[in-house]
Amino acid sequence: MSIEVVNVNKRFGDFVALDNVSVSIPAGRLTALLGPSGGGKSTLLRIIAGLESADSGKVEIEGVDATNLPPQKRNVGFVFQHYAAFKHLSVHRNVAFGLEIRKRPKDEIRERVKELLDLVHLSQFADRLPSQLSGGQRQRMALARALAVQPTVLLLDEPFGALDAKVRKELRDWLRRLHDEVSVTTVFVTHDQEEALEVADEIVVINEGRVEQIGSPDDLYDRPANDFVMRFLGPTT
Ligand code: ADP
Ligand code: MG
Image (cartoon, rainbow, N blue to C red; front, side, top):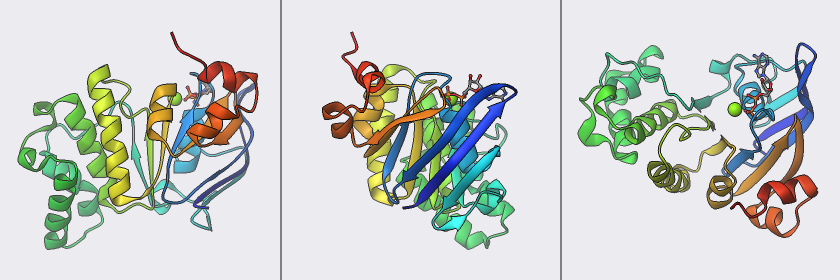
């Protein structure tokens, strides 16, 4: 198991955002955290990333206790919904950034960025500014940037949420293909049932700070654990 979340609790004041959450996220798979808005998905993802600390409980990444490690020591790549690119830097420099601050050799950086831009099909846009890309292209740049430092885990929080339906669908199919190519352990947050069911290998259903069910899309469809899962996955009209 690649990511182990064990008995994690998180409150904001009196509000219980995560109520004793335990989840095993398998290595090398594409896992969705799925559930209605306000259920605690982003909080859980941020705790896995180390951007937020739990009140109690444990996070293990690749067998290492990461509970008290800062984000940069967890070897995770992170992509948010509204990606904040460096507006004054080219696409190439944006992707190179994480390698430059780690003082990697220039040749290595050039080679790696070239590979990544090929991977996300942005090679011909390397010298453009982020503002000269479409929304979908910008999110692909964000993915390349997150992958640049060769993370063991890639975390995405509603990465395509801000895009229109057509681009959204294109990008999610594309995330599936990218994942199959690089096979990095990937966890993405979504409130969109269809998105999770069509793209993910494993789905963790989260509601009101609790895990309702963990399973493959088929498991969830064929054997919903409770009424909540049944209703949430039920036919959307
Ligand atoms: P989701 O991503 O599933 O929509 P979140 O994890 O963002 O849910 O939020 C879960 C709940 O915790 C929400 O009700 C939200 O308002 C609350 N919450 C999240 N972050 C904070 C914070 N920093 N301070 C106070 N409340 C928060
Ligand atoms: Mg969220």
